[in-house]
Amino acid sequence: MFLNIPFIDRMKLPFQSDRELRLLLHEMLGFYPHRIRFYKQALRHKSIAMRSREGVEGHNERLEFLGDAILDAIVGDIVYRHFRDKAEGFLTNTRSKIVQRETLNKLAIEIGLDRLIQSDAHNTAHNNYMGGNAFEALVGAIYLDRGYDACMHFMRDHVIGDIINIDRMARKETNFKSKLIEWSQKNHYRLEFRIVDERVGGDSSPRFSSLVLIEGIECGRGEGYSKKESHQDASKAALRTLKQDDSLVTLIAERALISAEPNVVES
Image (tube, rainbow, N blue to C red; front, side, top):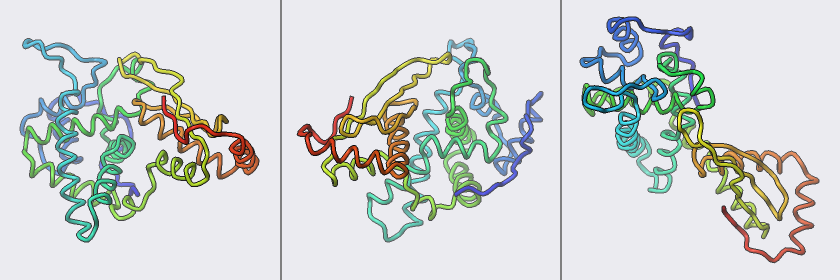
């Protein structure tokens, strides 16, 4: 899915001046920034944010919000034009695979963006999606600095053109929860998704832990920054376990013979 494109060296890249940051961004984006302040904000995690004179916190969450919207539009455009004979459901699913946090986090690592993020390591050690969030913020910065066309050029020619194989991405199975529900319903098994822990990290990011029960038997556990992500992670673990453990599948089948409860339950 991803090619190893050495945009910038994998060593830690602290920047001491705007000029250094401009050079690094030019290597990463293919153009020089006009208004560097947007990019500096995109790289600043809220764990080290400070309030400006206007009272606005100087971290990247607002740019992340903007970049998320821009990415949806741009990736939707690219997917629509690339798959000219595909239906709406296929296009939506493919776009979701590209803009999901896991993919964006990998992209941040591929282009070296993760090496430029400024954060408090103590407060963000658990945040596996900080790179993906910064990627969205970077797109927001590009949009404010250069406009929609520059965002399109970056995603189409530098990211999807060089790093993501869009055809392979479209074929990749990522909706593990739907796959598990389909398997359970086909076999008439009772499936339950249960949130077992909900906490807030040091950077105020929520963290959810969930487990999958099939006929009351625990089959997988997962974590995520939303209930949906934790359900997906737990479903992935459950599918892997079911594939490897025939005795578990047999036990589930035996339990199903005496079960008469609803097929899918979520908490």
